[in-house]
Image (cartoon, rainbow, N blue to C red; front, side, top):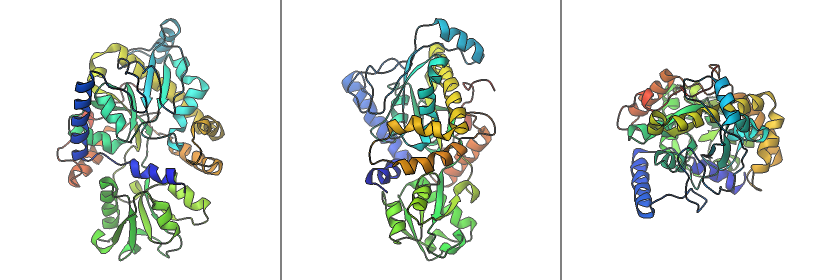
Length: 390
């Protein structure tokens, strides 16, 4: 595994309450001092909340035409408006650098799906995995990609964000047990070494999984391997890892000839959740029809890209490959990872759909595990009102 790929998992940490408060305070000071905020990885001033910065980050790409509709309007009406209205530009701040999780975004961009939906889209890499929530909440970035646990944490602290679509509608985080350890299930991890990034959510997930399998986490030895999850497994310094993704680290282990036993967390007692979500500014969604229309148009285009990526993983690979920097993922990595990932895009309730019941269950689980210090109601964190009609 390359150094950069290792760093991906290190920086994809969830927002703890302390991080939310610190990040919000720092951002507020920055916006006050500067009078305006610049997007991460650029020095240009941000556009209005439904527009795009005048320059884009390292992963930017765009297409044009515009329009949209209010949340109550039909997709057909949005398309008719798009054909006559002036172009609407928008920027989407990713959760991290382009990777297989973003295959539907880049497929939609490459195929012109956003253009036909009536929105000109720039996809931009952030400086860190927490940037999207901070900047969208402050109105300094129109849209972002984040994680359900982060959005719930943000809601518990009153950040001005709301998930509007599930991009990856299942957990990717998995417990991966070394194939050479002789351990066949989580029940066999008592007394064993488990590698962890130190992410509080991942550690709570591990504790839940072990408890379900009759093991107290105190019976194991947690090894802080940070960005060396794969290296720790390959060198047999640990018997298992938590915090790796079933569509990334699990695949890398296979490619290196040391496949592990993969236990998706939602199959091991952890409430189901949406790994990646699209986030928008909550207050602006409630009060700005133009912003509402832009969000709806963006999601309409993304739905097309999502369907195309699932139908033809090779097309998704072709769309994603030009965005991958040398050393991030090899051609072999993408060829193996993207088909696995696109299968996980399938949402039984329709593209982007989020279950209020599942969000509530996960929020309650976070509160029980002291990952948040205030109860969150699902409707405070997510809304499916802007998804295209089924």
